[in-house]
Structure formats: structure tokens, C-alpha cells
Amino acid sequence: MTSLAIPSTFDVASLRADFPILGREVNGHPLVYLDSANTSQKPRQVLDVMRAHHERHNGNVSRSVHTLGTEATLAYEGAREKVAAFVNAPDPAEVVFVKNSTEAINLVAYAFSNASVTPGSDPRFRLGPGDEVVISEMEHHSNLVPWQLLCERTGATLRWFPITEAGRLDESGLDTLVNERTKLVSIVHMSNILGTINDPSRIVARAREVGALVLLDCSQSVPHLPVDVRALGVDFIAFTGHKMLGPTGIGVLWGRGELLDAMPPVLGGGSMIETVTMEKSTFAPPPARFEAGTPPIVEAIGLGAAIDYLSEIGMPAVQAHEQEITEYALSALESVPTLRIFGPTVTEGRGGTISFALEGIHPHDVGQVLDDEGVEVRVGHHCARPVCVRYGVPATTRASFYVYTTTEEVDALVRGLERVRKVFG
Amino acid sequence: MQFDQLYQEIILEHYKRPHGRGLREPFGGEAHHVNPTCGDEVTIRVAVAGDKLADVSYEGMGCSISQASASVLHDLLADQPVDEAFKVHDAFVELMQGRGQVEPDEELLGDGVAFSGVARYPARVKCALLPWMAFKDAAVRAGVAVGPEVKA
Image 1: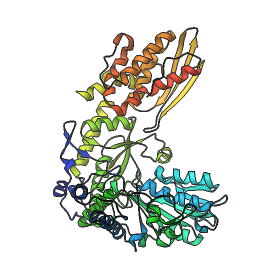
Image 2: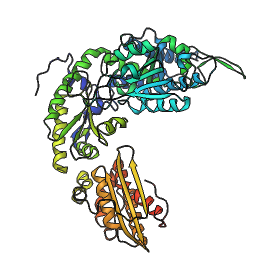
Image 3: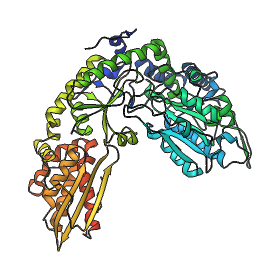
Image 4: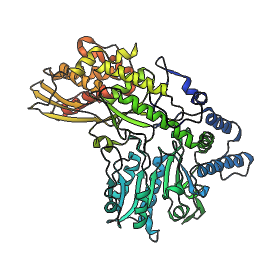
């Protein structure tokens, strides 16, 4: 259909054989899984590691002197080292394991909250009336609602970057939006609904000028492109395992070591303490300070296996493959009459997540007809309702790609959309 | 085939050419319901005259199932005695919650029987029930006594 500018460096067909689920049928058709931005599928290598752990090495971590506990601890901490290397973090102790991106972002929000009511806490985390938190209109609800709640609790003001008609972050008001009152800027790296990839460099530079911290929501970027926390220059990133070939129940908060050190705990309990008396406790250094209770051990190990898998392919190759598929899909979708794409229509500065509408046909109906063809897409507001409001639609249909997506699957989507138009036209 | 049972011609017909659409005056009670997962919306107005529902008017936007369901609701309930209307309401809710195991009463439900296929799609049951839940709230606000609790 179009010339493919960047050649893939791996064979997609043989890679697909690693994913057992891709061999199944849905409603009598081969599965066409185009919902990886929602959750990705898992290769056998990840499933095998998790099964082997439960079958051979299961013990609790960080507290057992026995062999199983030691093996489990080594595997769990080994996963932390893999995560740190994957995002080029200087120190594995900067990697905090959490449940998902939502929990990672809430952890930072509640650290702010707790610092704000604790005398003598680090002033960078103290919020009150007159202070400002800046987000964007492009955020997933998980990077929006926690800050609304934090501002309600502390009396701080929430402000946001708008979105341009073309689906880009509108940074024209940067210097007034991020100002001396700003304590934190929290924005998305890659939009889960528009596919836009934001370059945070100007925002980071401005935040540095005014002394604000920066959190980057990398839920959609870490799985799909090389992410280097040192090159980005941000203070925190959040991402989740299940969108990057790993299991559910495991996510990551990365934070600069010096900042994690300065943050008060959020959840109290076992494993996060230094000493405990009946009157008072002191707390462990990060990351343990933020990992109260038995963590998701096998899930962390599964994430480590997913990182091994992705690293074997190489993130530049993953990104190149998705760019190819995205270019093919953008062009194929443009051939569908009455189809409107929300977000960038060029591959530059966008990833493999494409939201669209068919005029006069509700996304629920689009998704239902596609499902009957075995094509699995997401429909709805994608937990980014303000984006839908921005474009004047109640919901969109979203196709999202990954390392295992083929051009044939995009063709199946386009054929399915033709059937949708026949049923509802 | 399951899929054809979901999108029966009757449903597509009501979706493309809805009956009695539009909010009308006078009315005794109004309710606006939203399906937060997909953004479907419907507003229902109920006008009561004596022991009859003088009118059931509506406006909404959303998928074919939710909007066709509102159209069928209007057909079945407007100008009906209150008692009869709630019999129909309860039968429709029972059908939707029956996971495809409930045999619909065509005499009572009319075009509503076309929704029996929807009951096999748990993700879509809420779409079909949206106007019926809004109707129930609107009827309460219009001062009409209602039957036992139902859950969407």
C-alpha cells in the first residue's frame, strides 16, 4: 500500500509463534488483536518464567533466611535491576514496584498529600492554597483524577495544557502555565487515545526554571519505544507491566533517588520500616519505604522476563516495526469513507494507537461488528473523557498495535469496517 | 447465529427511524442516565394523567442498542395504564437479566422481544437497560408507584 521507510529487523511471523493466544479463533475467525494499548498479550517466555517460579522457587521476599526465600528475593531484586537498566535509571533502588501506573501516580500524589500535613517535610512536596499543579487535557484519568483529589485536599490549584486540533499538546502558554507557583507538572509521554508522543524537553526546561518537579506518565511509551530517564531529565516516571508483555498486577514508579529519599511513606506496614515501637516507627530507605506488605513477587519476575524479551528484540526495532504498521494503518484507514481520525495523521511524533469515528455509527456498534469478525478493538472514552469532549464525540473506536501486529491484521480491520458500514449504513 | 440475533432487523429499524423521539411538555418527572463506560446517554420524561402514562418522551445519544431500546420503550409504554406499563418494564428487565435463558412474552413485549439476543452479550445488557432504568427514575419523580427494586 505504501512504501515502508524503516525495515523491521525481526521476523514478525516467527515472533507471533511465541504468543499462544494469537493462535486462537474468535467467533470463527482468526484472532486479530488490536487492543494492545489496553493490555498486551504475553509470550510463552514470560508465562514459563512465572510458572517455573511458582513451581520451583516460591517463598516470600526480603525476610526469609531459607533457600526458597533467598531464591525468590534474588529473582525479585533481579527484576528490579532489569527494570532500572531498561529505562537507564542510575540505580535499581530508584525503582519502586507498585500495582500499576495508577498506583504509581497516586503514590506520588499521596506523598505530596502527606508531606503537606507533616511539619518539617521537604518543601518541594508541600502543597497549599496558592500552589499549582499542571497537567494536560490529554491525560488518562489516572493522571488527572489523583491530582484533582490532591488539589481538593490541599487547596492547591489544578491547571492544564490544552490540545491542538491536530492532536498535539498546545505549549503556547507554557511560560504562564508553568510559573513560580507551580510545584509539579505531570503529563503523558504518549497519549493512550490520540497516539501523540509528547516531547517533554521544553516543559522540563521551564519546570527547572521555576523549581517545579516533573512526572511523566510513560504507560504507553515504555512498552513501545526506547525510554531513557536520564535523557528525558524528568523526576518521576510511571508505567505498567501488563502493557509491555508482562502480567497484570505489577507497575513501576521510577523516581530520582534524592527525591524518593525526601518523600514520606504512603502505605504503612511490613517491610517498609526501620524500627518500630508501640509509640512510633522509623522507615526504611527507598524503594522498601514504598513497598509495604508482600509485593506482587511473581508478577515482578514476569515483568523482568518481559523486559528480557523486549530487550532481545531491541526497543529501536520494536518502535520501527510499529512505525511501519502505523504508517500502513493511517493510509489504509484514510481509504474508509466517512472515517475521521482523532490525533496526528502522520507517523512523526505519534505511536501505534489510532482513534477514529465512523460518521453516524456509535463506537459500541463498530466494536461489536468487528468482534464478530474476530477483530478486537477498544471502544469508549478510553479513560480520557476530556479528550472526547475536546473533539465533540462521546466515544471513539481505537485500534492499537504492538510488536506482533501485522499488516494483514490492519487489512482485517479495514474489511471489518466495511461490514460495519453495510450493517449501519 | 448469535450476531444476527443481537442486531435484529427490528432493532436496526428502531435505531435508524426512532419512534416518538424528542422531549415533550408537559411532564411530571424527568431522569437523565449515563453509561459511564461508553458515554451513552438518555433522558426520559414521563407524563401521568390519572392512572395512565399520557406520554413517555425521550432524547439520547449512543449505540444502536440503547437508542433502539428507548424507541421500543416509547412504543410499549406511552398511553398505557400505569400497572400495565410496569408489567412490561419488569418483563423487559427480566428478559435482559436472563442471560438468554428467558423465553420472552411477545404479547407483552412486542418489538421488545427483539432484544432477547442482547441478553447473551453481558457487555451490552446495560445499553439495552439504560432507557428502562431512566424511565423508572422518571416515573418515581412523576409520583408513580413502582414495583420491586431491579438492578442493571
